[in-house]
Image (cartoon, rainbow, N blue to C red):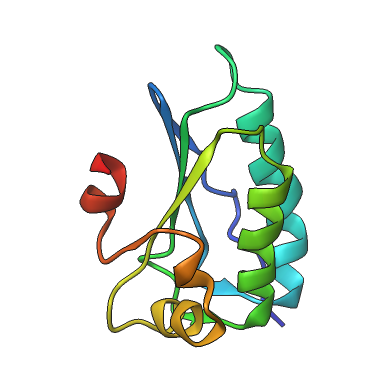
Length: 119
């Protein structure tokens, strides 16, 4: 069983971008808790919704289809016009899962966090 990190990472507000670091494992038990947290942190942000939400998967070592579902649900539930960027290591499992499922066609995926933040 996988547990969410304690405490959960705080999203960082970087003007028009919100950075949300993901835990080391994303599966059924973690995805369910992350979705409301991500959505509430971006919707209830002082100053209104961000222009871009950057999901940082660079520390994620395991991700199954629940991670893909989570990213799709985040996209669906965010304020219209908010872009979602993903940072995932090119040789990491998260990047491979995003490639195999075809999510990379719909969401920009960057090989490192600085690229995702700058885009």
